[in-house]
Length: 158
Image (cartoon, rainbow, N blue to C red; front, top):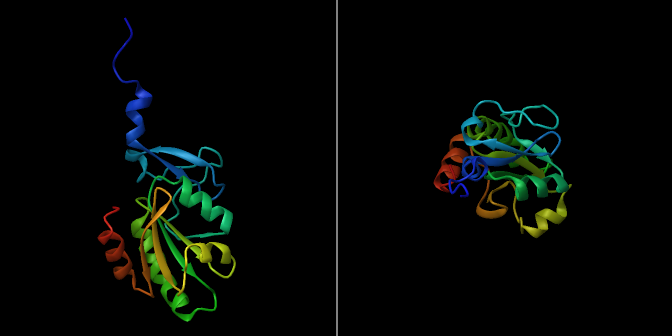
């Protein structure tokens, strides 16, 4: 008689998330209980969470957003933008508090104009929150760290 109990693989699936490595872009399956225990990439051996915003190119943006099974917070910015530069320390401070529940990234709209156009980024800085590869919330304008944290929490993704 076949064993009708769920296999270990099928019961473990809801308790794990795919996390894209910030260093080599390999997709890692991490149990939820281990997210806060400084998990490392199975391919490159480096930390999966650095506590700092990850600066992405266009191709890396696509993989982080599409393959991550944790929400991804994106700061669309440009180096010439004064409010973007003034918000950068607050965004870094928020990243230290939001990871590992979220991946916190930055995308330079000057270098990734196609992506900025695809998401209709009309003003910078703009924060966008992605879940399961889809944008679920957007907030234009510079904010302090407390404002960023409050906005993310208000979206109900934590």
